Amino acid sequence: MADDVVLSAPLFAGLDEESSLALVASMTPLEVVRGDVLFHEGESGDRLYIVREGKIKLGRRSNDGRENLLAVLGPGEMFGELSMFDPGPRTATATVVADAVLLELGHDELFAWLSDKPGVSQHLLQALARRLRRTNEALADLVFSDVPGRVAKALLDLSTRFGEQVDEGVRVAHDLTQEELAQLVGASRETVNKALADFAARGWVRREGRAVVLLDVDRLERRAR
Image 1 (spheres, one colour):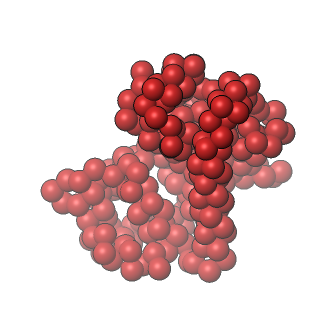
Image 2 (cartoon, rainbow, N blue to C red):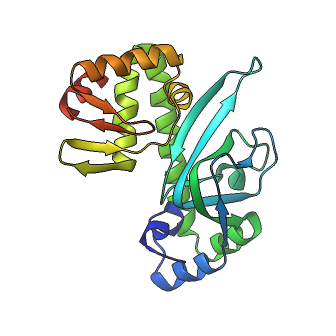
């Protein structure tokens, strides 16, 4: 089951091919479908996951029921690793956005590898640092950017991981509902739809259900600043 997508995850950075394949062989494959919940916010956790296929969303829910999406993850990305270094309740709920194949690794198996390959810890900590940096950027955007700017930035971010070059531009199959996209941006669905409609009217994007075609990336990048 090992392939370049799986081996691009931070867990394998710095490992030789033989060690990487052995680590993959020790992981448990897991097939899940849209709507499945891998774990809930507040639950105890002792395993991490690598996305081989599909998409996973990480979200949090407020006391009054509102939801906020922290991230949408795709092939080659990893989640759940925080609980490996700091055992305790999960900080988010992980839900399947698009049918997925995951690789699962438990705490004991990981630390057996880390004791033998201490260099892997550095790469995992770097991955955590990148995620923290993205979280800080998202918080700053909520304070300093308007909703259209955040929508433009979210579309560009999704395009870097899920975009496919087509004749007209970049097609991004994000697989998110309108409500989920609004949760990712941190705004109401109505406000986000208004921003998308404005982008479409300007000829910057074309909406296609749970996908969008970015027709003018340069304009979107300027709007996202």
